[in-house]
Image (cartoon, rainbow over all chains, first blue to last red; front, side, top):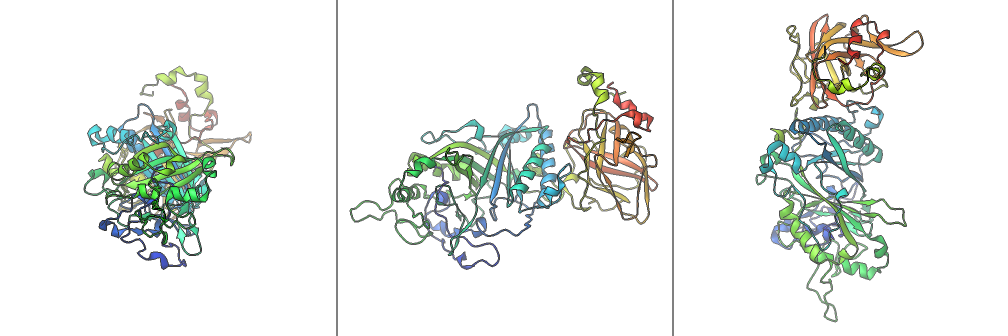
Length: 416
Length: 216
């Protein structure tokens, strides 16, 4: 499977006031938890990984009733910070004949509308202004595909990683309808109404220049176990997506990247179909063996707690490895400090309960997906017991623009 | 009288053009609103934005988009101002006009590089009980420190005889004629499905309005 579904989450630091603050512990510090896919990229047994901590703010905590996220900042919102429970990922194609000036127009319109929406003000042409008053922690994050960069700055300016990921033929069943695109909106909120309104305004606002290519809607929520908060469980019941890089170096683009992407990032969106019917037939022992972790709390099968290091060398009484050679936790372990990225996954369920159409929208942010994400994905494609129940059916990569400064629109540096 | 290429429009039936919707005297309530001085992005320069103040005189004040963020605040600014994108002959400017001065300001008309003429329009009920738009006979008056909402289906600034299409994401400048001088306002052009009510020139008190109904 992708470094996505199903990793035991690290404990998180409750973000909300009044939460137990005990989990800030450097629980994870220095630990090569290695882990489950979710932690795959972020953990390694190397000393350099000592700075990894469970980034509580990324997963847990109750939202203030009317949370307002800043729009004007060096980095766009929706990457670091609390993960809202509802998301829509909307990819667009430029309409045929669109040109660089149209890119500027689109980014100008979106900047104005996003700023209005994130601060609870109706966008200019909003016929339902009342819906804009409830910000519900709304964040909108804008990305561009290779065609945009080529139009504006030429083909040579397109980063090597900005394009389709390499094929992973052992596992991929990628469908066009969930893949690619020229532009991306990641819209996240605590309210599905706020989200729907923002999605419609932003889509209609640019419809003369861009048409929707695909939409993926997702959901997740932090869970309070009574002892600590976990980021989410996926629809297999696995604790998912918690341990994250504490430092920003793996997540945001620095001096090593193009100037116009400084403080930007990349987003990898993989739609992972999860075969709930086949999973239904697997008993808990088999489920835990496939992951290498306990279902109850995500602790490694070799013992300890959720954030303890799996002992991949441990043998049982008969001499067999405690953690299966194909266990997700073993395969997903980062082998270098480079293999780290920020994960922000959501579940999706478009089925009926009996008819299954469900899975995970795997979302990863990093400075260079080819260097940081691809090695982990390659390893998992080659061998991972979770591949029995999971299938990647969509894949897209976008460059996440830097945030706008005062008086600027998104893409100021791109268009400069 | 329309200089740009209108071959596409010429192909359309004149009847259609005459009977429907050209633009902006629209319906619905809408978007105006919000606190002045908070928008920002709309004030940035757009690529091919059709900006520039009227050349018919020296502007008394400068004003920047909807943000009001320029150093000198003119007597009239516009918050969340916008104009409807169109490839027809007419459009309109909406938003919330703000009187920053301590005296009533009377807006009598205006001008714009992108339009043949600019008028202040209002919506009134005609003898048959239908809401129709017409040129506001006395212009608009904004009381000191107050705002004046321009919205589809209500008061608005009409742009007539557009010289080129108005493209979403660009900006345009309309210069208001006021009793305190000329006030240029820059607004973003936006796609909008409302503001489509029939503009029947027979209801209009403005003889000049009917000119735009023909398709060249």
